[in-house]
Image (cartoon, rainbow, N blue to C red; front, side, top):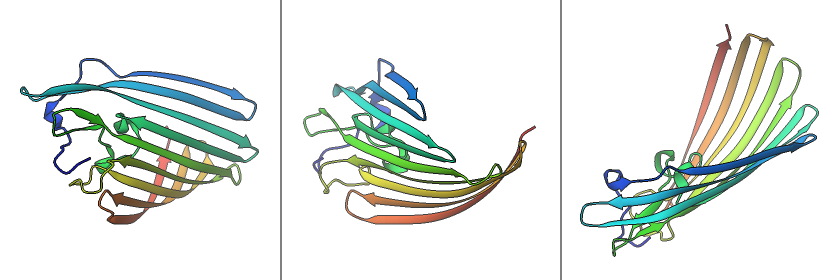
Length: 198
C-alpha cells in the first residue's frame, strides 16, 4: 500500500448487500471437521468518489479426541474480509481494503491460524493450552499508521470443577503484536474466575 493511499473512513463505507456465508461440518469417529466460506461487498462513497469490490474469506477447522486429550486446529485466509479474522488488525478489526490514488478500492489479504490442546486430568480438573495468530498484509512497510499488523496470543489455563454447578479457573495469557513498520509490542495477563450455575 503506497504512502499516498488511504484506508477508507468508516463514515464513507457503505454496503448494499449482506455478507453471504456457507458452512459444512461432519465427523468421522473421534475426528470432526468443518469448512466455511464468506463473501461480502466492499463499497465506499464520498459523494465525489465511489468504488465497489468483493471480499472473500474461507476457513477449515478440525478436532481430534483421544481419550482425555483433545487436539484442535483452525486455518483462515481472506481477501478483502479481514474483519472476520479473529483478533486481526488494529484494535482487533483488520482493514479490508484501501483507496488508491486513483480513487479505486484495493483489497487487502490476511491469514490466521490456531492450535489448541485440552487435557482432562481428572473428572474435576482440566488443563488447556492454545496459540494463535492473525496477519493482515498491507504489502508496503512505508504506509503510515498501524492498520497492517501481525497479532499473536498464547493461553494456558487450569479449570477446577468441584461439582456440576461450581467452576474455578486461572489463566495466563501472552500477547504479541508486530506493526507494519516493524515495531513490536507485547503484554502478559493473569486472570482468575469463579462461576456458579443456578
